[in-house]
Length: 201
Image 1 (cartoon, rainbow, N blue to C red):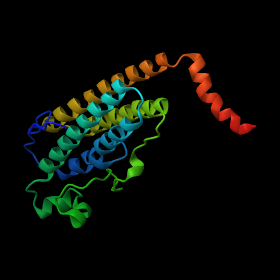
Image 2: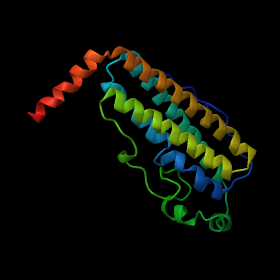
Image 3: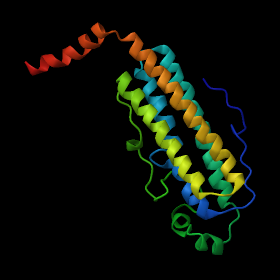
């Protein structure tokens, strides 16, 4: 059970709408390395994670990613709020507008819609944790790219916050991987892998 506080994790107060920027930011709403994919990845992986502490970590970070998904939604909404049709056309937002008006819909910056292939849940502890660490770095890189393109300080402030959380999550998953590797002594690790070698005989 989650307790929901009706506030954003970091404030979003954008004074100047800009659909051109919204087209870029929306990739973190529904793109391949976005917040929706992250939350679904971690909240799915937690069920098959044998270590309860790591399962709890996945629940915590997966829940936080939902809060980040909410923040990105607020950013895109504020960037497109009250735009005139002329501004929508001039800023290249017309194709999105035709399909969704100004509603929020998960897609990448290139227009590719979100689907379940955007996240992995393999059921193998080491595989999933390496996936999670890579996912956090890819999201961090995406935020770096956004910060290179966007100059509006009202947009950059929450983006910098989100970028920093990717770094922290990467560190937490690294700690979880070390816990996992420390709990697998060489005998247990080889016994686990040898069961698959029997298929060769």
